[in-house]
Amino acid sequence: MASILRTSRTKPVWSSLARARFSSTAPKNTTLKERLAELIPLELENVKRVRAEHGKKSFGPVLVDQLYGGMRGLPALIWDGSVLDADEGIRFRGKTIPECQELLPKAPGGAEPLPEGLFWLLVTGEVPTQEQVTELSKDWAARSAIPEFVEEILDRCPPTLHPMSQFSLAVTALNHNSAFAKAYQDGVSKKEYWGPTFEDSMDLIAKLPNIAGRIYRNVYGQGKLPAIDPAKDYSHNLSTLLGFGDNQAFVELMRLYITIHSDHEGGNVSAHTGKLVGSALSDPFLAFAASLNGLAGPLHGLANQEVLVWLSKMQSKIGKNASDEAVKEYVWATLKGGQVVPGYGHAVLRKTDPRYTAQREFALKHLPEDPLFKLVGQIYNIVPDILLEAGKAKNPWPNVDAHSGALLSHYGLTQMQFYTVLFGVSRAFGVAAQLIWDRALGAPLERPKSYSTQAIEKIFKDKA
Ligand SMILES: CC(C)(COP(=O)(O)OP(=O)(O)OC[C@H]1O[C@@H](n2cnc3c(N)ncnc32)[C@H](O)[C@@H]1OP(=O)(O)O)[C@@H](O)C(=O)NCCC(=O)NCCS
Image 1 (spheres, rainbow, N blue to C red):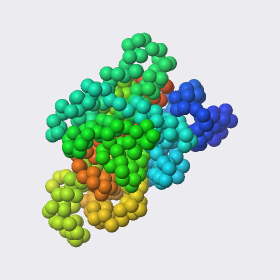
Image 2 (spheres, rainbow, N blue to C red):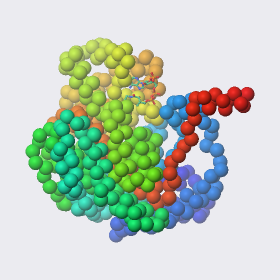
Image 3 (cartoon, protein in one colour):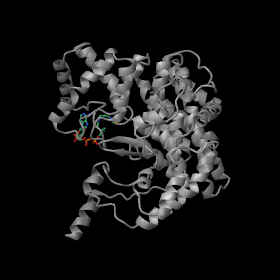
Image 4 (cartoon, rainbow, N blue to C red):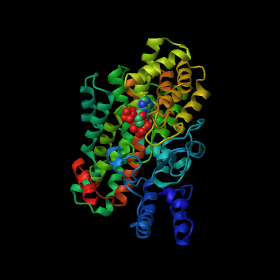
């Protein structure tokens, strides 16, 4: 919606509303919830006006191929936090990744944006002050404890259960204390849905480091989980829980990592699943657990694990420091074996993913000589030409997952099966922001129409 606001130029009423809603910086001395309470009536008016002006206009034809083809390009959802352009990549509330890196508040001595600020931006469209971000860090620290029975669920999981399955189990179980589920049972009015949804969303984000840290330590045997420190920011606490809190560069990586993985508009599997399940008024814990199950697929979030698995297999087959020729042969063997090259291609993007570029720049600054980073670079010079020559993939360029594992691995987080959990922690920011707005705007139950192949044939036969 931010982009619609920006492209509308004519009506004075509209621009004053836009100014009231999306001044670029947040008013001081307000909490996120207070600011939301101010913005919601404006946005309700805004949506009403857009629907009155444009509600009956067509968005273009739907092709039968789109029904069979995973709905590629089908305009079907409202998603306010971010918009993805095929060539330019993601913008969070109209801001590119470099703009977020420049504008969002940072930790003292840090250079990367604090994800707390990104969440504020996703929810309100405004850049918060340093103080507002600090308050969010404190608020999330205060909400971070997970119920004892959830700890027990995690402690009872066999270490052979994939970390993403454990993650999804724990998030589902958080629904036990859902403010929204309770308010609904108590007969809350539709107009008030957003308040308990906001509380659940804040709790959800706040509790993820304790869940992720517990899974990591249970599965990989890295000692007792330390306590969350209310004086530290979210990424610092997450890093500490994973055992990397003393490494400032790793903490900075987490700040960047969570920011760039947070949201990628609404149609990707995890975002759309969260919105879909949320549309049944399932609470944010149930909705986001569903997102996680989608993120756990190898064509989506699990690709960050798959990239490292693929690189490791490559190294054991052709050795480290392999020649370009040997790498080319390995890539072709992957394709001829009927597999995808993980970390390459995208359903929307048609250029190198700016999330890949942001990670590459981080690596050039912090770990330019790392052998795995160099291999990632070598592959970047080889794979696109091969995918183009193979002629199937619409986008031969790398996506976010082609790079993240190499960075984590550099700092000693080498357990590849854990990588998608970190993606999941990040993705909660985008899904939660939209769930709050969906409840505030009264988004309806999702119920698109499906057709059988027989029905499609009949429709066109009858028309002929
Ligand atoms: C992301 C992805 C699922 C997008 O799928 P999509 O929108 O269907 O992509 P395309 O339209 O370009 O696919 C056309 C064909 O090219 C293939 N293709 C796409 N990317 C490919 C890749 N990286 N390696 C090999 N083949 C690929 C597809 O599998 C498809 O083959 P098919 O016609 O036999 O089914 C796909 O690019 C992929 O599987 N990439 C690897 C996994 C990955 O990195 N996922 C993370 C995404 S952020």
